[in-house]
Length: 295
Image (cartoon, rainbow, N blue to C red):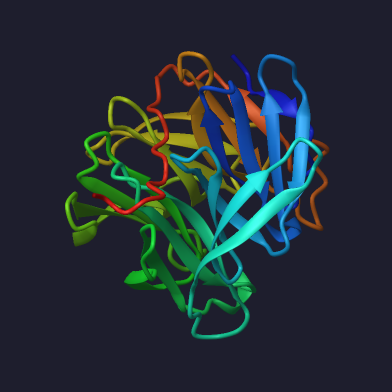
């Protein structure tokens, strides 16, 4: 099945699609515009809300609202049917410079929220990015540093492997880490994929039920699937140059939704849209944020 355009969103930087099974709906963000958007699979209805800062990544919370990584830190978001969006600060991130924001992020399988930071101007090539772990009621903890454009965050089905990428043209690596489930600590960093050997730069990612890693190949109009051993298994095409992140959804979690980027120089009419693909694989439910401390 060729890629199907489901929303002609024309997002500047569409990112972080999240499927909500109980609503049969897809949520995602448009980073620089602070946009939170929702598409209903049943009706095709599109709803939109606007946050007061750049909105980079989201995760559903177990309380039914959202936790978000934004420009200055982590926030709770509660969207309403009238188009209003309650935004409550949860924790501030102490960026080393003013021109930074959070970028890619998601929850681990224990409900801790992870998000990486980056300098706004990717062209500077500044390796100031840090990966933070955030748990309810706690201060964000810096875990890994030295990234230019941190992306590709994902966890294996058993949660014991964490994946992280750096999208910058000078890096283009995906790393795997051993992940301690109890403490939420990554270790044993190793190269999982050298994307210089494949078309596109590594952007947002998802993991399927077989443990395979799906990564959007930005600048190549592709989504690649790699086995847990790091072998390229298949590549699916989308009709835009800059796919940005993917997520499994649909009633059987067998649809792959893909967001995309529409930059100032784009000549592609569908750029910034949201697409649906038949990946030939099944995904996993996205973990929710544990909004209360254990016990």
